[in-house]
Image (tube, rainbow, N blue to C red; front, side, top):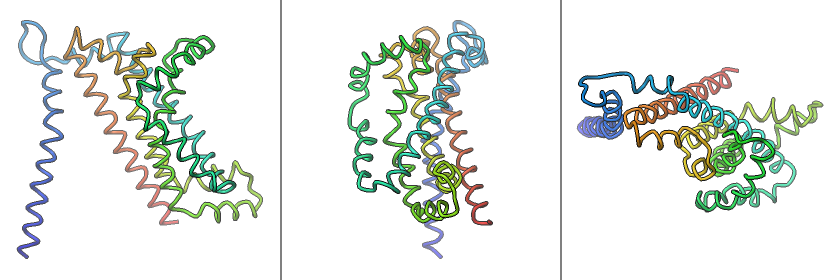
Length: 262
């Protein structure tokens, strides 16, 4: 009984310390972002409204959100079929695919940007100078983390048996991947999607050195002239990613419950 009470007290103290450690900086950011500028006193929401009223900041927010969406879609389209095909057809190539996907993790982002700068001069010449062309670079950036999440989900199911059963019933490879394998690795895909969104929303080196206006670049420039507004944008970005994580978590749980009930 004493051990149980002591464990509960220790857990409560640990959770309280974690809450203070996590939420205190966020409260400080919120306090700073609502402070009136200049000689005015009191609180104001002008710094939060600045995200909507300022055209440059608003366009950078939209660009970052679209970049996150396109990066997730392209990552799933490229990674899931490739990993399923490798597991079913050429299992000996798994180590090679794993090495190629994890390679960007060992190379500093600055080195990658320097290496692809000349390539991106042609990309912008062919596709325009929109920040959305960063999608290709961001897919490379998120590959190591997305690969691990999807690979863990694939390892938890018997892909070979599922594919053979579907093929024996006349299903094509597109049906096998989209309607058989993908629903069974939803948790891994959602995890990879969340990691990708978090990385894209906070990525600065690629966009800054390749001279594209994304949210982190805009916040860094805004911080020099209007620090409270930049702080409001940073806090809003963190809250958005946190809410996305909670939403993906509940979505994954609902899918697991539906699978268990069926």
